[in-house]
Length: 323
Image 1 (cartoon, helix red, strand yellow):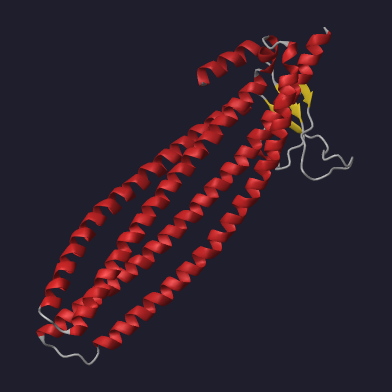
Image 2: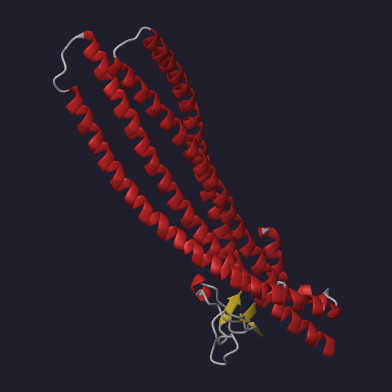
């Protein structure tokens, strides 16, 4: 991609300018133009009504030159590198969870056999109760680990989407930069089909805008939910330790008492591990929601560029037909 890009820059030596409304401050991305750039004016629809009451806003400018595509390629490479590292780290976590799950499964089976044996010997009811609580706490840990693995897989999917939208941006910018070449091989009777594409693209922008709003709400939800989960986990852990401490107080020092205390400690450990894993799940979900919000914004930008490109393509073809 980079070799082709620089070949085209040296061959053409020009830049291209698009004028259109960007409702999400696309100009802040740093796109710019040379003074002698070719100009294109292309208004893009926005769901709110503008001054003329027809759902259009005033035109503003996007500019595309060689440096802009170079920067987009650099950004694409940066995102790919960051995503690659993140996915490797996530997969490492998942392998650890899978290995831990096997160890927990063995411990769970051992405890189940101990429980069955203890029931058969009609052992102490209190110890049997603790055995059941430990087995249940261990099952909770296995279940929440599986939930975390699903959450990590969802994060990986979002990261792949993030790479794609930044790659798409490069493609869209290259289309604008090479519009002259594209026009030269496009027949003028393609105009009706392109106009249909424009209508579809405008509808798509409205859908994307709504999707971005929804993604923003999801980020807010998980931000608040994470705080609730952290606060609840702290309270639960404190209560758990306090309750078992009160149960252990006053117990003797015989062998049975020591075995019972080991069970108390084990249950607390598993319960605290479950709470900690639940926090990790919601931290991961919050991070994933932020990635999807970024993907939504970038998709919006890409759709704006593509719609402007199509509209300018029609204008150029109409001029070409008049020649």
